Image (cartoon, rainbow, N blue to C red; front, side):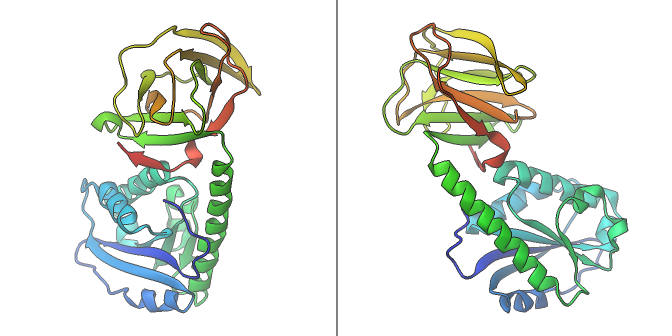
Length: 286
């Protein structure tokens, strides 16, 4: 989800997850944000335990291309552990899927800061009774928009095209990292990852999060160092191009970084490698 820093108005989704017939009307928040050049969309819905909230949230955020998400936190919601857990899970899933830089903001209504779960406290939270809250939300969104623009520029400077595919192959536990050259093809290539991380599979397949080929030519591997980390490197001789990508697939937590680059010869060690910070990149559903 790219943030366009050139727009004067940013898009914000406001969600009010209510419980047990305590629904209120927070539509007035939209007008308050519009005065701060924020185009807000407001949704109110009942939150129930095990409702799969995160799928609904992800679909809503990606359908329009919002620049941030503001969720209203009431005393009724945070006092119900299962419902609060649904929202915490959704926040965590969106952070992993869309990226940790995506703005997610809590608006407290009748809730003191000390009552909040730590999962809420690590993100910006403002009181709805503070008359300055719209400006605080605006500042948070625009600061993150500038950060997003810097990340986009850095991504454009990278030699390779990287993509993260969550729910790879339709399996919610699988995440695939795809990489392919932007220019000339590569015959011999290598991945390098921390030795503490295990892969499920790796290889070559069509670009766009497609299925891996069962055939790998001249498979080779070895060990090395990146900074203070021990890494394992591995690769093959299946040629890569703008249409054919290299993939490495994980189940569970992703590594902090992945290195990728060409090698000299079918059995050679990796040469100059590009470092990809996995958790700073938005993901797509395969």
